[in-house]
Image 1: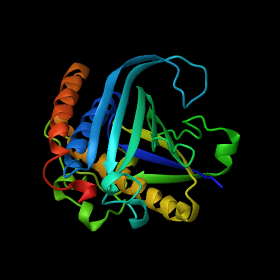
Image 2: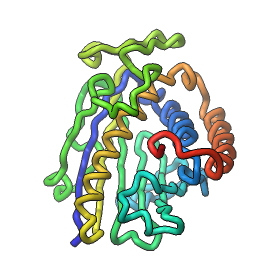
Image 3: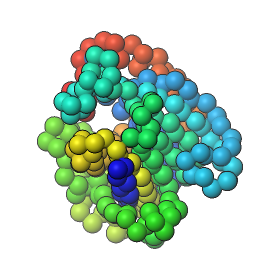
Image 4: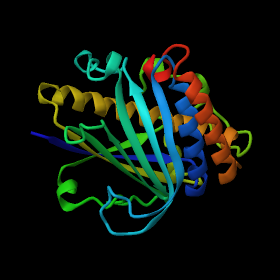
Length: 272
């Protein structure tokens, strides 16, 4: 039987919603570079404007933004029993995203196995201290089984292998904005301030591997969100002031580099 999970993460950041829009796009691309190599990592298929409904939302609304289709090639981070699913033990996960900021919808699936494994992530970005109870418009059924995690980029514990002093918000100070270092309780007084809401609707139906996969994915989500948002803040001086046109140019450059990195070198980042 398929097992559904609703995990909601709330991440508070020392940024404005407009700043995060640029920082998020920049950091996603840069992280793709850092996580690609040795046959694993990210392959861009499409990155183009869209206007229309977002299939996963099923709300009938028309959105306008950027659509991306990526393939994520995995091997070393998989449980042993899954490494034989794809050729040469590599599992391909399809990532689709509809960026209609401040709403972003991302789905992950395994081609031809969507009924067994599917993740839908709805993200919403909001300025200020007021906490929204249902920012991602979950249904009553989803709300009943939702588990909320508040993630603080300062106090959240990291895997020892993920820690990088240059990405530590308690040590980083922005030359461009003067923000940082951040200390315990920083969100009580900091301006600007924003919150990212991310709801994960996770469907798993993989026989005896269901529990293993559920726990693996939950650990991976927490690990990814903690480190990626610490990086986004620590790279503030790299992306602050960039225009959306400059971001698109950067994404095109990264796509070309990924095509080379994927077939060279060793697995890197979370894949090493």
